[in-house]
Length: 465
Image: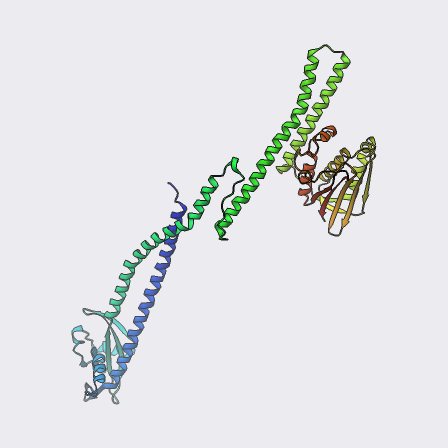
């Protein structure tokens, strides 16, 4: 079954809600109208009964109406009050008086039934050939020892007609209202969804070759503008991600091409001419160096890929940054001395954070190794660990050749090398600082660099404690 479109779904939803509300309101209004009309009939009957008590006179067992027949208003009121009435003598059950309109209704009672009305003088509804009639039962005692039952009635036909007409109006009017609501709701849904359709069309026009384009924002500040802004943000992230992928592919191809070209050249040279065993050994040693470079590159790529994919869990334990930095500096001192560099560590006591000691050690190794690679002979590298209240700061400062301002924003990107020839000489592939940033991010730290050409570089990592 083909699913409904959003426009149809909205229209059906609006109509269903309206139908439910209309049905509920109709039931409430019908019930309220019924109660109101019923209450008015009850009040009218009570008023007429009180009037009959006033105008009825008894003389020797006979009843008659006494009123001013010259008063037109009084005459009209008494005629209305006495249209349906009858009087019974309680003691004998005898019918004393009955109106002309009451006689055809056939309301004849036995003495026992008349006696029963004495004990229940409430109003009752009866159904006759002329429709429903409401009767009031009340007692009259014109003289000691005389008790009469007075029944006064009003017809309920007007109430029944009014309720029937109202119900008929609901039964005919509700479908018309729902039909109009379907048409109007579909038109309103189409009008409301038109900007969304335009947004979808604009989105479909953007492909991988045109990621610089953006969907239009109407400026209304509504939910559709929020969707458009979210799509534009996603396109921006996608554009950056594809740019990173292109840069990564180019850099990876470059890094792989150099050692492979060297390996092929040395192999072709060995095949072209006869060489002494010593020359073959030197050639094989050179090839092993290229293999080692390829192995390091692949291992670093695998480590970084696994790290960014979340496949490498991090431990959470107290780590003394000062002690860790001291250990790392001591392990790298032979390397720095071999390059005639001075490597020192300055640390405050008790700078403890929560993290993974192994990955934090690798972070320091990458930063210090980077400083060693790009610091000329007789240079100086200082590692500082300082505690600042709720944070801990690790700095690796060198007197190296520095980084140009155009390269600083990209220094932590994969395979980025500010000076390719310099990096090739140092054996770097541009992955160490990317891994360092990942380690810092996973520890909730902020890594940054301050550098200028010829003035050295300072890498800082600030941890929350």
